[in-house]
Length: 166
Image 1: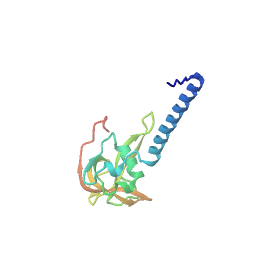
Image 2 (image 1 turned 45 degrees about the vertical axis):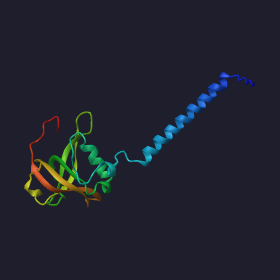
Image 3 (image 1 turned 120 degrees about the vertical axis):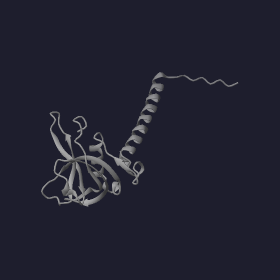
C-alpha cells in the first residue's frame, strides 16, 4: 500500500486560487472585448428583412436614425414607415423635405430637429410643419456627402400626436 502525504500550505493555495481567478477574468475580458470590437451592436443583416416594412416609433426613432446614418450600405433597400412633421430648408429641391421629430438635447428641454431626408414627387403638396405618415425605401443619396434618403412610396396626412408621444 502506498501512502502519499500532502501538506497544504495556505499561502500557496491562496496564490493558486488567485492565479486561477485572474486567468478566468482575463478570458472573460478578452471575450467581451472581442465581441465589442468585431460585432456591431445592431446586427443589420441578420435582424432586418428587407421585404418587411418596419415601423419606427417615437421611442426608437433617434436610435434608428443614428444607426442608419452610420451604416447606410447595410440599410439600402430597407422599407420603413414612420410619421413626423415636414421640415424644409432653402437648398432642398421641390421633391425633398426632412420628415422630422424634435429631440431633447439638454435637461432644460432644449430641442433640435432630427429626421430622415425624404424624396417624393408630390412633396410640394404638403405644407411645412404639417404632420404626415410615410412609407418608403431607404436609398443612398448625396446631400453634402453620402446620406440615407427615404424614397417615398406612400404619404398621407395625419394628426399631430399627443404631447407625450411628440
